[in-house]
Image 1 (tube, rainbow, N blue to C red):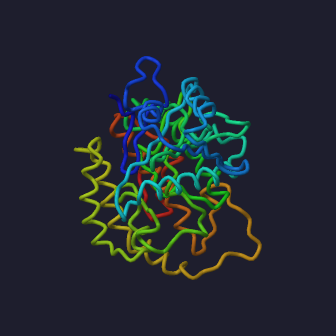
Image 2: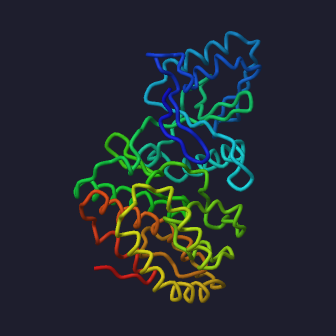
Image 3: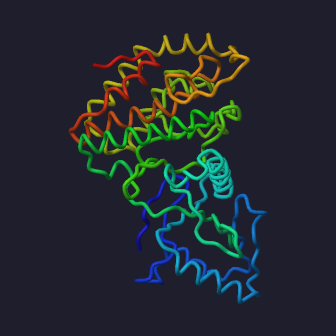
Length: 344
């Protein structure tokens, strides 16, 4: 049995495996063995979802045949966690909401920047997910290597930096944030680096002020100000950071995380001071969407719009050390300077 990838909220499995259809880690196998009374096919902008009763054998068999012919497609199965991380239904709905937003933002470039795709078409409608027997699945483009698994050369790390930065700039222009960037939420898919796992994403204006509801992700790749804003003092962040660090074994014995932590400790007071000054500052009356990190307006959303960039910058710095190579300082260092950190 092969689970291609598993995180806190879901596991990635094959839709169909023609070499072994009885592998229980495929959507096809789970569907034929669970014998559901009803299947719900999830659409996005095409007039609503489609319900298929088990008694309608013709439609049911058509779904099975469509799954068997699906190529270059995986599925993410959402798993039950707890109140703080979210139920499988909650996380499925969050990711689906992210899909809807991103399709509006990227339009015909959606497949360039994300792994979002329809699994198949049914009655002329694009199907992005399936629900049956209280299990929730969402379709993904078939990709395997997250950044922890990639062997980076200087040229490949530079390519990764430019492509992820391009995606972040588009999100920034649309006042949208991923909210949980880290190496295993970025992936090499054929010849393009993409961002995955959008269940924590949201428009900046809709960001909750509750720690539980903000879905702010890990401590290691997020700046402590993100949690300070939610009432978590810096000393508590440091404590939780050390606990969370054990989840990133590829950073064991690395110097860069220690150096960054020292620089954050030195600069945190300046960052908090600037945050407090901007906390109640409104934007200009004539709003011009920023298209890059250099154009982010200094208002109450200033740091919120920088957090994805910060997590991305740390990812690139750490991967450079892990792979014993160097990174593009012209891309990464301007991000750190926004948080009062200067590196040579």
